[in-house]
Image (cartoon, rainbow, N blue to C red; front, side, top):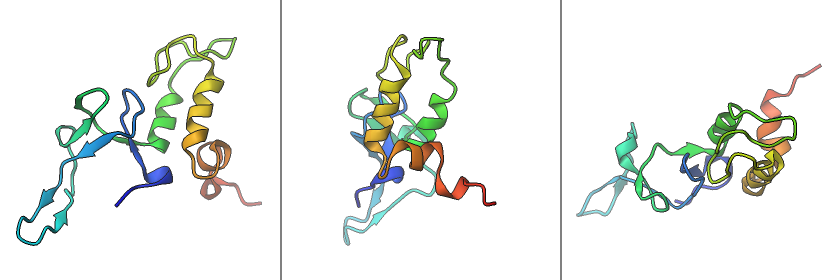
Length: 117
């Protein structure tokens, strides 16, 4: 089952979706049983080649909210594969390309958070 959109999982270190999750398989029936509680050692990033705790796009967006931005709209700390000094708009485009609708509707102002008047 391939995850799409906001449910897709990413490496929080490099932003890659080339990740793996350990599951149990019954060798007789080939039935896959997913773990109820996934630990960091159960997840792997093929790009970083290490165990990571996988994140959704929404979780990465929240993490990005903690990255300081200077007066020139450049990030001041490395984030995913973006180095300090990168325009925050470049990072926004990375998110936008991965959103099923768009960054504005999916992560910045999701419908379920809209204020009803």
